[in-house]
Image (tube, rainbow, N blue to C red; front, side, top):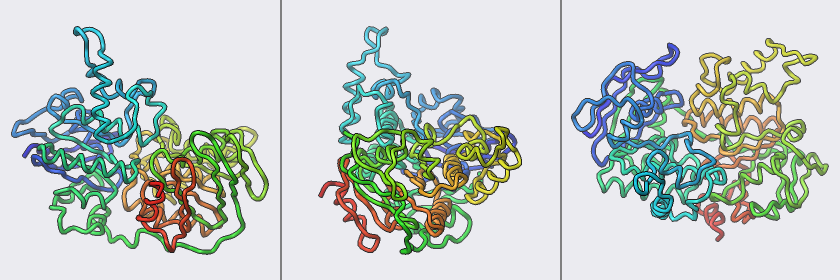
Length: 492
């Protein structure tokens, strides 16, 4: 065995995150690590990466007992991690981020920027992406930043590579390039621990699977012969029914209409409408303009031209507060930077969108806030020991639920959801899908932007496909499939 983690336990604030967990890894193996949000997957990997220290247990590498006291020590042992939450410095370039802490030197003193750029170009070429090594990370999309994280991990020539939700923000084309790389790593003897909530991915290239539940070890098994449903049942400890609710076909009046909306160079001449009770999806490759369109509708950015009609009247939201007041909620794709106030409590994050409901004469009514928050976190089954604790202490999936809870609390009429289930486990995904269906049944309208085609196909009444900033086509639920959506997304 390349790696053996034995009886690993870890607690935070007297809450057990891991309890006697085992994990082993063979040379050249891709080992899937799965479990619901809060099961302990990321905590276990952060222990292996030297970020956390275990309270109990042992770690053996190539037959030797080791103490991984820091990330630097872990890297020296040939371990590299691609984090679920991006850890890049926005004001530095792509090349500087990739070699941060490992800068190439000239004469042993000065940073050799030219060499770092050349090495970065070689790494990016493996993804066949048009990404400038000199570009500031702040100018990149979420998907492009994920590619930088992957390139950074690969650049360390690791013997053990930990991938924590690496495809969560990648489109199918970019994800396929990553899968090809994984096959190449396997052939070179690199061992990979792969964490993903996309169960269909695991069946494609993983050899074995380890399941965690509520911080405890459930089982390790060859993945061959296990169906996606069987894996999901092991994760949640119960039988899961159909993941997607039935698609409803009962619509009300038109709520939003967009005519010729343009913001160059992101998107141009975009026209569509959405009615009460309708769920429409936006598909497309990275850079297609979907997220930029959502930000413009929400008042973050000003369009160059075009008209937006809200409840039949033309509107021009100059800032998000005006959109929120009108009844529009926007769950952004990046919960860490734009979706949450990480240092504020769960309660404060949920109630921030509706101050009028929890205050009187500018004074906060704690009981009103508590009732409002409790109602919405219970509806979404948010796992939070205490609602007055910072939201940054929650798992990624539970943080995403808090983002959705704040727009539920605001009683929005139109929900714009950009990657609403990114980093959420299969059990919680089913709950989110049911919630979206319930919102539609209540006469709300929902716009879903997603890189997961099964999600759009399973949820939406219509799918609008964008290519290079324009709507390339529209597909009804009855005729949409992965092949015709991808053809339109590729410009065919």
